[in-house]
Amino acid sequence: MIDAVLPTYNRAPLAFERGEGAWAIAADGTRYLDLGAGIAVNVLGHANPELVAALTEQAGKIWHVSNLYQIPQQQRLAELLVGSTFADTVFVTNSGTEAAELAIKMVRKYWSEKGQPDRIEILTFEGAFHGRSTGAIAAAGSEKMTKGYGPLMPGFRTLPWGDLAALEAAISDRTAAVMLEPVQGEGGIRPMADEDLRKIRALCDRTGALLVLDEVQCGMGRTGRLFAHEWAGVTPDIMMVAKGIGGGFPLGAVLATAEAASGMGVGSHGSTYGGNPLACAVGTRVMEIVADDAFLAEVNRKGALFRQKLEGLVAAHPDVFEDVRGVGLMLGLRCKVAPTEVVAAAYDEHLLTVPAADNVVRLLPPLNISDEEITEAVARLDRAATTLEG
Image (cartoon, rainbow, N blue to C red; front, side, top):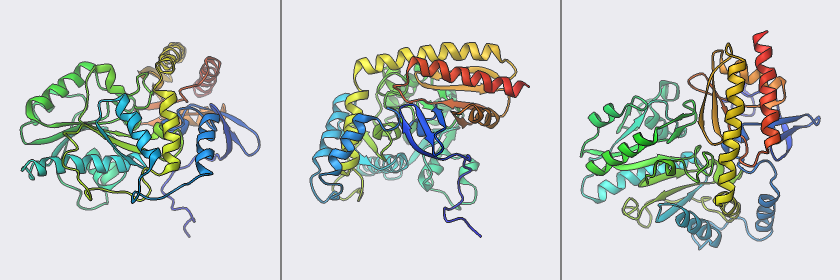
């Protein structure tokens, strides 16, 4: 007997019927403080009134027309993204996985149009997560994601995380691109050092390889800048975005320079739903709010406050926690016990967190979480840790 829902998820025994800001509320009224935000998706919290208004206003007009026609909402979102970033052009998708697929296609088409169709190798890093499609799992390369799926898309080479010597030895004028997350999410909240990002950009410039950044999880204000690579003062050639860009509505995008996108002509890629009016209306409002300098300054302030309190938590529970890592409101607690134990103990305190690799529990709250909610979250983590010590 198989469940009506394909059993590919190890779900927690929790279900929520509504939400308010940083709180997810079960059918019986139990309120959970949400430090997962749908895995870094709900950047403005649950049922944000401004996003609800944007969605319902558009829902009363037109939902879907397909990309056979002009879509003014998509044009507006693309212009906002271009105006706020390195990019010259944007393709709107429904998800991060779709964005990863297009990024890979764009790299290969670029070199094919340059007369080098065999220049296909993309260098990636261990611990990466770029989605669940066959192309994305080939890019990440981990056995956990690739085992059992037969021959994988060729052309990817995975290097040790943060090993710039290995990258320098591997990269050449035959390398098509280097692809990485400025801050790994699933990999355990591991930021790439700013200096290393600058060196990677320089290596790409030297060899002609394209730099592809996956900011699906670390982008959209999560680290205190609109996009995480801005901290290093570098710009990519191609960037994948999703999760937070829709504030909870399925939405993604690929941003690119005119040069990197030069191979993508009419018919080279497409999507039936991608860039639909509903998604783009919400995404536009998210961009208008999150890209504001004052909003991002608050993310930085709250991130510093949260980190300070978490450092105290680690000091108070040295048998449970090892350290705090991350940037802005993309934080992780490295644990000395199994992260799933911490997640489960937090459930008992009506607190939602997200496990990750490298013995890390991710803390990814809405970017507009209040100071009082941060204090309450740490108090609940403190009680959870005390329980684990007992």
